[in-house]
View 1 (tube, rainbow, N blue to C red):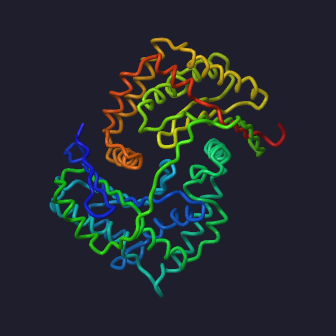
View 2: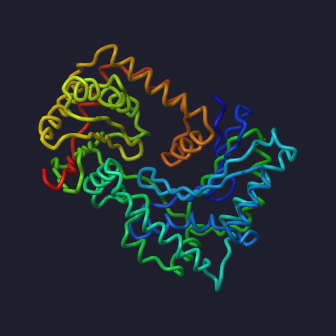
View 3: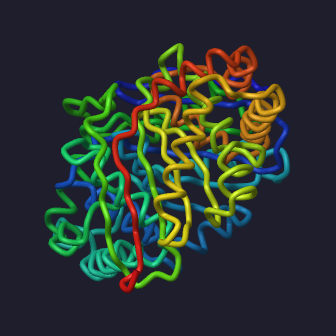
Amino acid sequence: MDAIERSAIMPGVYLTTVVTDRFKSSCLSINLLQRLDSKTASAAACVGPILRRGTRQYPDMESYAAALDTLYGAQVITTVRKKGEVQCVGLVADFVDGRYTPDGDRQLAQVLDLLCNTLLNPPTENGQFINAYFESERDNLVDRIASQINEKSSYALQSMIAHMCSGEAYGIDRLGDRDHAEALTNKALTAFWRQLLETSTIEIFYCGSSPREALAALLKNALHNLPRGVLTVTGTQLVPQARKPRTIEERLDVSQAKLALGFRTGCNASSPHYPAALMASMVFGGALTSKLFVNVREKLSLCYYASSRVDKWKGLMFVQSGIETAQYKRALDEILFQLEQCATGQITQQEHEAAYNTVASLYKAINDSPSELEDFSLGQAVAGLSGDADEIIAQCRGVTRAQIAEAARAMDLDTIYLLRGLED
């Protein structure tokens, strides 16, 4: 794998590079990191789309799109990601690597200049965002939040997390909530954008063939007017043990019930026990050979799907399943029984090998895409880690079945959430 290098280039500004000639396209992103907060989450989710409407030089979407066309069809998208209890507001550019353009390294300089101006120099009126842009993007955000209920599986998971982590920042959705979104004003959002620039830790990522030193010099010049104040301290609280398990039921007009379970694993990605927890989740429900898939779905036909995954920042494991409401008790009991099987060491060599192969396949795929490398590197930075995907694969290769069983025993059930039909 190509080396991943991360270091500070300015106060509170970090540059991560993957210098490689393996890809025809390059990726450049700027992410502003803040603590997840219910009062500001919706504002953070709204900032990126407004910034993407243009710059002072290209003050509308038509002229902005034309500028991207001159950069050989470069694309700039906005992201708002939740990494543990950190909200990451990002601008991500995808563009043809300089090796394939007549402009060579000037291509990177031009994309970087556009991206930094998008962040720092939006078009304004009366000292605020252009009001028509603000109203449009606020309404879009309200619609996005309202439409989340239409995707029942993800809605059930987020609802379970909100109950499980009530009182913790992790319980807040990455888009915030409808009430705060509807209450946004242009004045408040403009002020929040300026505060975001001053107080955020900034993570910049680049994957492409240009030298790191040249990119760092370009960035320092492009960001020389970046306002810097007292930086917000970010991090994620690890709750090692669950409270007494709670059961939450909600009724909606659904034909298929959704069952979501939340467990405290007792460790996060910085813990030496994390590779075992990751492998335990894979054996339990993370692969097509997992106990949930083979037993609960295939052999017993108790669900339409069942899977598990871990959140490496918060130290949680989630189980998601689609079931018939009449099968709820049987499905729940069998899911917990399969976790108990893991905890008591009832893990075959085949299950162990298949879990490792799944982990290896997933993490190897990260190295095959600039966008996947970007997301992985941001997650590592948020977690305070420096290892690459190959290091995680190597760590999981050394995990024994006994260690998997130990990790499964540490998984503490916190919340059971059932989304059932109105007539069930």
